[in-house]
Length: 220
Image 1 (tube, rainbow, N blue to C red):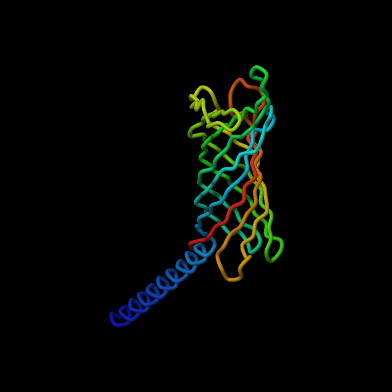
Image 2 (cartoon, rainbow, N blue to C red; image 1 turned 30 degrees about the vertical axis):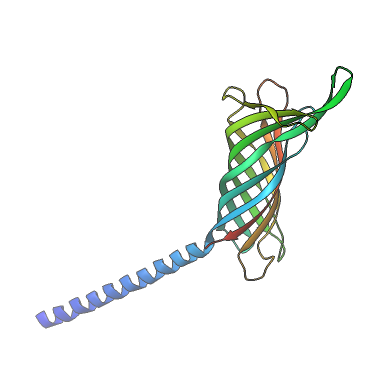
């Protein structure tokens, strides 16, 4: 009887070990699949920005860079979120009169933003996809510069926290590609951003608008 019980006990232990091994293999397989679904990358580029609706609004060139996380839902769909930096503002010009002379006065608004865009991506061909979502922006600092004619930039004024809105949000959309170079991890995207909120307070309508092109690489 004891021998029979010992055999049953050994059999149960063997099955328990086998089940544990199978469970570990299944979990490691799931973890590998999740790792394949999720990618981390870096992107950088430049864009043209303006304050939409503000008088004499012109474009200003600025740079942008970010760390991005991509979660692949299916073969053709994914969600991408960035954490990065982008410049905003605008550069404008107008004619002024000084005595008998007419001269151009240039103004430059500059804002530095922490950007957190979250976009849904749909990859509808082998090299091209569409993306769209919402972008949250936190303004780190802002300033205004002016100059007359070909002179140097003067009146370098830093905005105080009460002069502009620290937070902005809006819609972001564009096109992207992941397979422009086969079997490589390069990313290219062209995005447009439309802000919902005024940037500078008490000067009328002035909402962020920008177009940005960026190049990136998925690290893993």
